[in-house]
Image 1 (tube, one colour):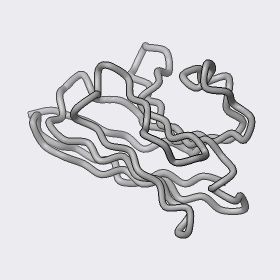
Image 2 (tube, rainbow, N blue to C red):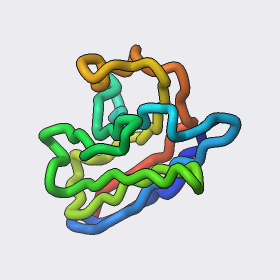
Image 3 (cartoon, rainbow, N blue to C red):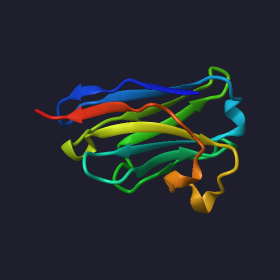
Image 4 (tube, rainbow, N blue to C red):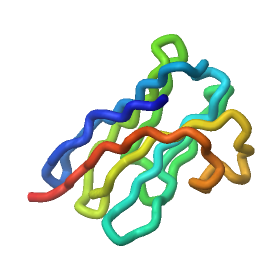
Length: 124
């Protein structure tokens, strides 16, 4: 079970911190990722951290503005978002999978577990 939170309405240039709390799974064994889906668009990859907690991967559109982190003890992952733009408006989903390989890490179909999504709206 994954529970995402932290979304809301923010002005362009603002910041938000999303959280994803995991229950019933051992977080350290899972690749954890964030995806987002804007209205009328396909779900797209945002960021991922592999099991070994190596440097996160980011979509080019968010690189330098978003920072993903994980806390295996607290079973939580976070997505710190700064310098938000209107095009960042979307429902953000956290996802987890034990077996996804690096080459498939950006593909939504690679993940078995999904949170319910949290809406981020960037607007003045």
